Every structure is written in structure tokens, then in C-alpha cells.
Image 1: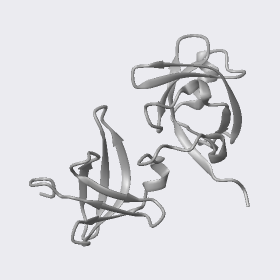
Image 2 (image 1 turned 60 degrees about the vertical axis):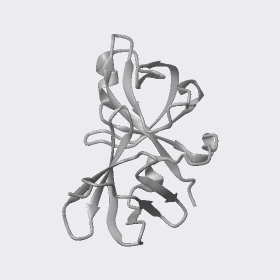
Image 3 (image 1 turned 45 degrees about the vertical axis):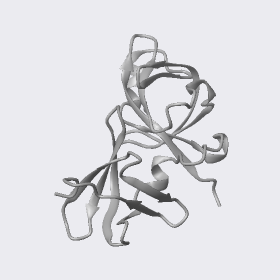
Image 4 (image 1 turned 30 degrees about the horizontal axis):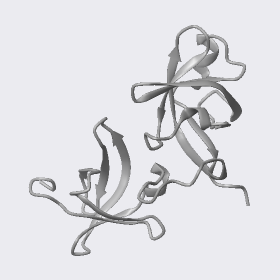
Length: 172
């Protein structure tokens, strides 16, 4: 069985003239991009799956600047625009207690504190201050839930179940 791949983030667009790309990480803020060895870029329309090695990295605000090996111009870097970058889960250090990869919670059931099903997580939005989970509601529609301790009460990755406290005005 092939080893599980983890989505590290998404290449955004070329930056500068040397082949660097802006990169939106899906990892906790304390992960150092210098520790990302290389991995796989999944296919996009018109492109093949491609293994890459990252030869340089740096942080700029909430984004990273990554330079794949062999990519030396904005035109070559453009191939990666809006593509997801994956590596083997075993290449990453275990996350601290209470942290998880975005893909580990996508599709998880979301329940209130009385165990009533609210829906499932179908998107994660990074706002800068905190993430926001987009919930596809069981009865239709969507609900946006801020990922803050006052709202998110329990995240059970193994059972794919999340318990939240719907504060006043949150479910309207």
C-alpha cells in the first residue's frame, strides 16, 4: 500500500525572476519551510504529476517563498501556479497535541454539545487571525465556524468527529 501523502499547501504564483513561487502553507505557523525536503506536485490540467525538491525557502508574512530545483524563471515557475504540494506523512515531524493537518479534518462530522449533527467540514478558510471552517449543513446551506477555543470544544481525528459550541448569532 502506498504511503499516505499530506497536502503541505498551494503554490500561488511566481515571485521575482529566479523561479521562486509564493506558497500558502496548510501547516501550523511554527513549521519551518527549511525542513521541507521535497515532494510531489499533483497534476493540473495540461501538466503531469511531478516530483520536486525545494532548493531554497524563506518566510514572508503568512506566505512562504519556495524555489523548486530546476525552476529558474517566472515562466518555468508558472507551471506550479495553483497546484497543491504533497509530501509523505513520514517526512514530517509529528504535530504537537491539539494540532492536525487540514486534510485530517476535511469531511469530518460537526456536532453541537448535545450531540446533534450540524454537518460536515467542506472547506477551511485562512483569515490570518484564525481559520474558519465552512460547514455543509445537514439540512442544506452552509455555516461558517471560527476555529477558536470558545467555539471548537473537541476534535477527534480518529473518529472524524468535531464538537462545537454554537455561540449566540453564530448559527443564524
